[in-house]
Length: 427
Image (cartoon, rainbow, N blue to C red; front, side, top):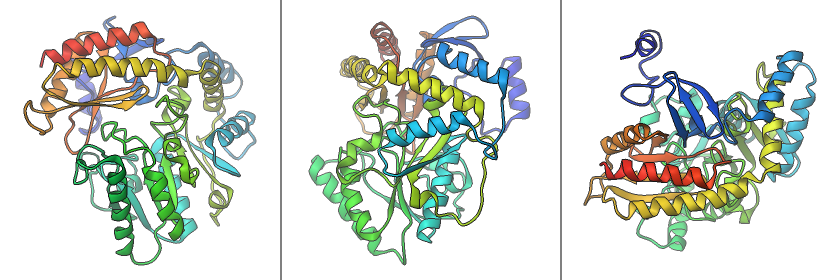
């Protein structure tokens, strides 16, 4: 154990655990690469848990942060902030939600927590629908709606949560059905579940592509079908875009747009990539929902001048350089390469995802049984080859999570695929 790791263990909680048998200290980044304290360079295919969205040390963001820090770092929402208003205006239009209002937070956890507060206040109910295998953060309320036991440390919750089928396409009781029959079965399950509820349900919260759950997703249109049911009951739809937002899936700017036949969500939460490493989260909601609170509130650090400057610069770069299109093109190539690799590795059950959001699920060869040990071994082997990736997935951590910055080049995609090829064959 290194000296820094020992110090980490001595003062931080046991449940704050770094990756790797010998954890690494990252000290520098540039583009799609990072360097550790020993000078080793890595190709970064995880981006600080999908947070370094455009590139490490992006000049526009670095310059915006430096210039703003030289003027004013903090003021709070008690004062007008031009950058916060400008970023809110851009996000409101991009969200697709009519008459939208935007509230900034410091994380995805806080964004989802705020969305739950708004939905339950608007509906006058503490009943919430969530998706099985979902994850929405580490606060008391968001842990209470997490459908993944690995990330839910307590059964206590301020909310009454009911879990719905549908977010995991290739496992569970409906996996063998066609997409159309799968969607119909999940809608029937939702209808049946609502028939068991007493009183009003506040909202359904769902990730269009589950992040921590292993980059699983339902057939396109499932949440649109859910929305028709929700609308009949007056139930709000919260789309958790903390990981899927800003064009990462390539096909759409937001994950909800794959399910947009019944219109946009009532609330949309975002975080991670918009700050490119700076602490930005937020909620977009219809004005009547956002304005339903009958008490005053502020945010001390949400929407701070320095993070808003970073967000504006980062969003501008993403749009000006069509990084969504790059995610579609280069992500499609990377997915093809990884599927070709998987065809030769018995331990790979499935390669899934879209754009630059790809999951590789590992099982014990010849079975459908998750293999967390193989996942950890592949993570270590990839690191040994100079590639950083993530892991997650269901009740057993058996999925490699691949989510590089959206500026990934074709050459870097090919290099990463080759390293993953070696890592998976080493199993």
